[in-house]
Image 1: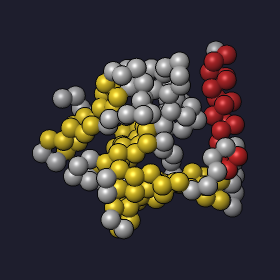
Image 2: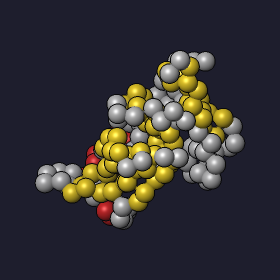
Image 3: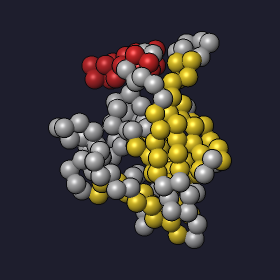
Image 4: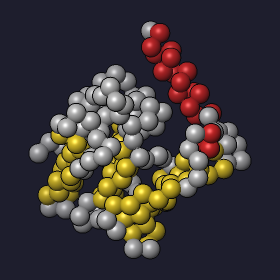
Length: 164
């Protein structure tokens, strides 16, 4: 019960904490021809700041996502984008199509079994920050599976998509 109260209060605090307090300035994330500019945007009302990713391919804007990423990857055909984060106050991952439509995501706030199969290492994080090795399995133009190299070197199948 105490853990639930702590998680809920942490989530409420994270929603009010200004991103600029611990993030800093804009940063560019790249994956092949995909480029996402990550920056803090100022809002007129609470929470007053919001993290934003503006993603484009070869200079053509694809989408803007109000979300955070430590790492991004794009499928070879450019139709799918995956973002990973090990930070406890944002989505652990999200998968979008090239138009920005959210196909799947996992958040630490979605319950104890929501991110089944993924564990955190003592060094922090759940995926390998040096070699995440994100792989897309696409069949007949449809995304079937995404795998990531875990922090312990084991391959992790991101949940939510159909099995192989």
